[in-house]
Amino acid sequence: MRNVLAPRKIGVSVLCPGIIRTQIMTSRRNVPQRFAGAVGKRPPTEGRRAEFIKSLQERINNGIDPLYVGELVCEAIENDWPHIFTDTDHEPFIDKRFAAIKQGFDRICGRTPRR
Image (cartoon, rainbow, N blue to C red; front, side, top):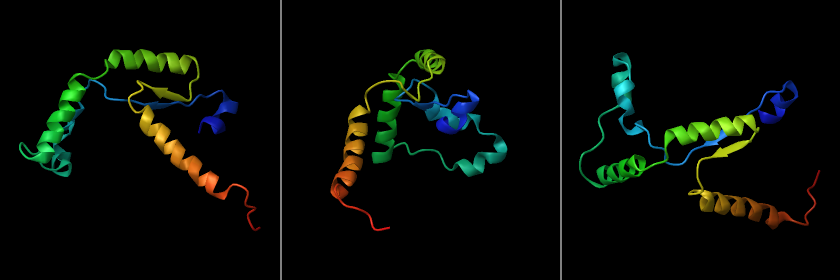
């Protein structure tokens, strides 16, 4: 979309947030009653999944200040950044993914496709 809309002076940015201090874990509180059945049952209170949820909640509680994210987004829009990252925590995963993509090109380097 960024390239398509650029001639019209419309910027497009992608926000790639890390762990932000929000109320996302309690978001079911906002579901209108008419959709309550579609949301599913409440999360488990014991077991492996419950431990994972508890761990995630702790990470969120110590997450990035949402006001900081808002300021970052404003700066990014003002400066026409294509990608907006909130931190570098996931950078190793991105590096690994791009390395795997690059390997795909490396495997066919020097070949001429049949047309």
